[in-house]
Image 1 (cartoon, rainbow, N blue to C red):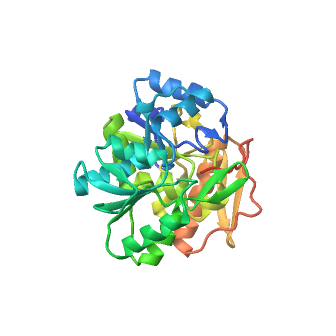
Image 2 (image 1 turned 120 degrees about the vertical axis):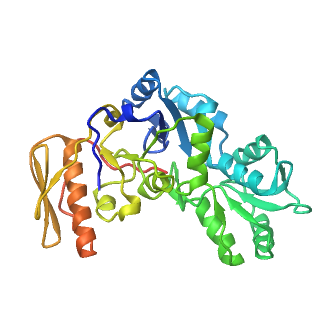
Image 3 (image 1 turned 135 degrees about the vertical axis):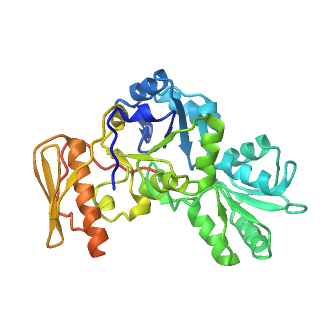
Length: 339
């Protein structure tokens, strides 16, 4: 269940890790107010990290995009799943190892910077590394799949099944990972969220002893925070909405909920729970005959807290998700497509 923060949430943390799509920007535009919030986090003396599963772009390219949309960032603030994959490979095979690469520039640069030798010829390669790359060829996928089947170790940057594009959600790198592992009959070592390597890489590179993950997606950002026992704050500017929260098992539940990043500088009270109701800040939520009802008047963040808590109690006790189809959340926040 949700936890309480009696003071501004950011005060308890020295590293704030931000997901990108759906948290900092959507498409080519920054989310309203984000730049000012991130500046304020920095001014408070906290470390700031931008964490992305996208392995196709280098940290320089990600920082350039952030700067273009008005968010202050440098390459050293950005940590990618390609960098996490490179560290996994160095730890397993040592610096200088030849790695058969299937991906784009982001992966190649990460491998080189880690002291590895990315190659296109499998001769002498000790492992395969893959990351999203729009120009990956089918013949190379076939060759890699065969080599993995025959025993070559496989590290994947991430396993996201979708990726946002100007024409909507499209198949992501996870589809390629499933193709290779399904054919080969083996599991890949996955570096990106929700697995540990990317989260640990972020803390190692950027610094901090008390990290907080801020994300919009339960099955990457929030689950990734659980993987390293770090607290998380879910924002509602991306893909997660009431339907996703209502069905979330414990491993996908955030520590805190806020409609926007402004929640970093706010207190986070927890609802009071009785046998039938959940109450906070003028709102009362309950699930009766399988349906969620929220009544009263108060702040938007408290509405989400009572709604999520009531849904999770019902899910844990009954084994079935509450029906939220006729429940309308308050406020202007709307669901947006994001990675």
